[in-house]
Amino acid sequence: MSQANKKTVPSQNKAFQNKVEQQAGSGVKCSALIVAAPHSGSGKTTITAALARYHRDQGRKVTVFKVGPDFIDPMILRQASSELVYQLDLWLVGEQGCRALLHRAAMESDLILIEGVMGLFDGTPSSADLAEYFNIPVLAVIDAKAMAQTFAAVTFGLATFRENLPFSGVIANRVNTERHAELLSTSLPKEFRFYGRIPKDDTITLPERHLGLVQAQELSDIDAQLDKAASHIANTGLTELPAKVEFFAQEAEVDGDCVQANIIEGALVGTRIIIIRDSAFSFIYAANIAFLTQAGAELIYCSAMLDPHLPDGDILYIPGGYPELYAKQLMNNETFLSDIRAFAASKKPIVAECGGMLYLLDQLTDMEGQQFSMVGLIPGKATMQKKLAAIGSQWVNLPSFTDNAAEDSADSIMRGHSFHYSCADIELDPTSQTTHHPSERAGEFVYQHNNILASYMHWYLPSNPSLTLRIFNKARYL
Image 1 (tube, rainbow, N blue to C red):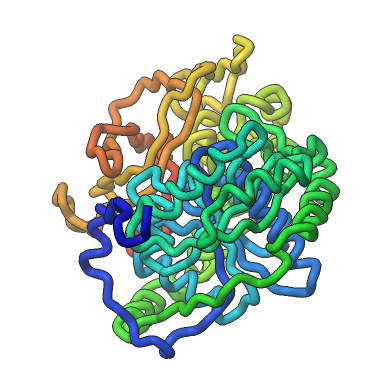
Image 2: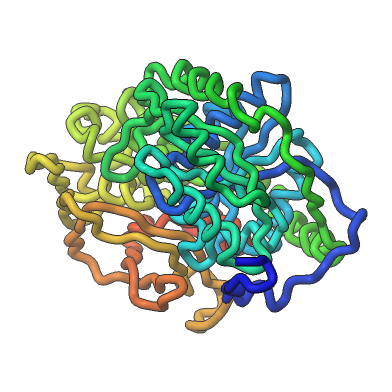
């Protein structure tokens, strides 16, 4: 089929309708790739991490992003690149937020790598939407262990399904012999670059559990795995830096950023925010930490598993994670539990997301049916189950934190997502309920109990700076 006659499907993302075209030469250029695949499990994270580690070891600064709201993949990618990993999502982060992150990265980096989410065209917005919006070429990762000529058909579909999709080429994953790689490469149409193969190698396979990959800090040999994965990159065409992409910062958006920066800068000076961060509670956006830091808050980290006492502070922030895997250790830390109860009794605010909310319940039952008494600040119980309970991007109205309680007020809208295997029976009336994007179906409940704000929803704090500042303003609770 000729390029002139190929059937293509245009993007349906409404964001493209308002996109402002930039004048070539007015932006900043940086080598960039989006690493995508036909489906989850193809090896995107391993390939992205291997690329990041390889180029980092060549003395280059590599900035890595993750499409979508995932927490665990960025931990692996940060370990590989030695740099913080932020989310890129045209809805969650927003067009202006994504543009600002990419423009800043382009000014500071030699290479920008973006790991896609699910399959290339899956989701609203998808990895393909991001690639087209910012004109970033796609590197397709195809698990070709059981393929021959069909490899070419899958490549052709990925490259041509979307009319304006920039496409760099394809790499074959889990292919062990040069003969197999030759079959794959010779079947490809000439216009598609074959970057080579990555062999099936159990030593670089990242272990998984019910919420995805095992966290980087739990893998004792993670650096050895990343080094071995990078050694495979050395045998491919990906040793060269990819083509440069021009990234822009619009003048109007720069002005808007200045206004927002003035609102944020110093707004939380004098506020000590305690953040529990350990293997049980680690699901927190890098952008959330950056936001609170920019606002001038003093961030104090502690471990609910290892520290005997809760540090002094004004607000306690408990992110999501795996409390079910560490329930016994959490509950055995009795002095820390007592400190949290005393903190709540002092009327100081607690913000809890997903696993953080489970920690505050009366009881948690793990996947083996073992029951554990939890902190007991929120009346209710939760039970882990083998199947997924909820997943998806969503937004919620929090009118109690604004002066304008209108249901449709943008001042009270927070964006985020949920992803959990537990079901909770909470003996409180919810104050709000989230709405899924883009389906608009009802989502998670939000609870406000005394000075506790809790939900299964993970908040993306920069999605509403003024609302976030009100939530974390200690004076509001006095």
